[in-house]
Image 1 (tube, rainbow, N blue to C red):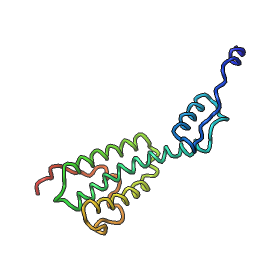
Image 2 (image 1 turned 180 degrees about the horizontal axis):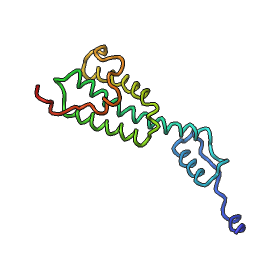
Image 3 (image 1 turned 135 degrees about the horizontal axis):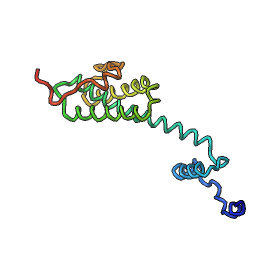
Image 4 (image 1 turned 90 degrees about the vertical axis):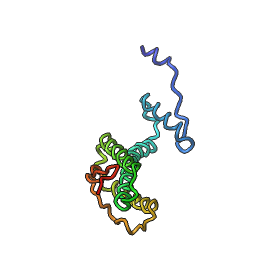
Length: 160
């Protein structure tokens, strides 16, 4: 059996540099990992890329929360302009946020920071989309996470 292993062609060495072609590098590194060729791995860049995967998941959650926040701000500050589209966006992005947290429970540990970052951007966007002065919107997020995720928004609006 050793003779068979010794006669098998040796896999070629890693050839792609991260700096030159990250796409090809990633697939080459995955192949090296699967082959157990540990000494050929680009450990430093692999560690950076793995951390980036986590950061990407946090950005996905932030993006979903940002859109919920922006539409809730618009909903609260321009009730006469409420639309079915805002209601739908809030519902859809709540689902995205809930799914991100369900698939990545570790994000719960950074939820306060992610929510604060999302609100900072949502506040700017709400101001820009409503033509209301930025000062109209509170500097700190007026919604806690549970309210953000569950507060009813109905279309058409209930009669007064």
